Image (cartoon, rainbow, N blue to C red):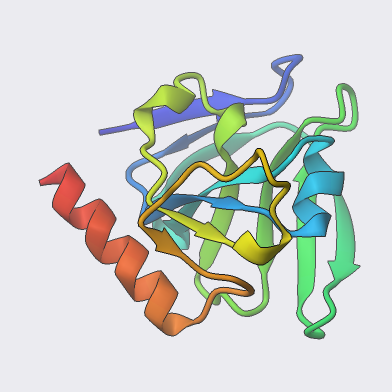
Length: 149
């Protein structure tokens, strides 16, 4: 099942073959990045990226953990399209809202839930108060696999 998307102006386009999981992040960096109450992320294996066209600019932010985050955004319309995190080797993350059909994704987890705005929790069964760990990632991947089956 191919899923495509791009930036607001159409200068950047991408297609993925499949995704590992989709989830909500309530961290302050995602609030700043989106200008909203949280960020919605779609995590893929690098090998599942089938096409990526268009020029992007990259902004690098170093998290409190010391992990660098590289955000790719369109230099024309400023839409953040994807990012890479050093802790997720071999994977990359796409902004769910950048997909042509963001409704194709069911949110299976929430991270940094302790930082959520009181009215912004979406009520996922899998929730982590802070940063994700391997147990969280395994749980959201397993839930997504069951839902796709």
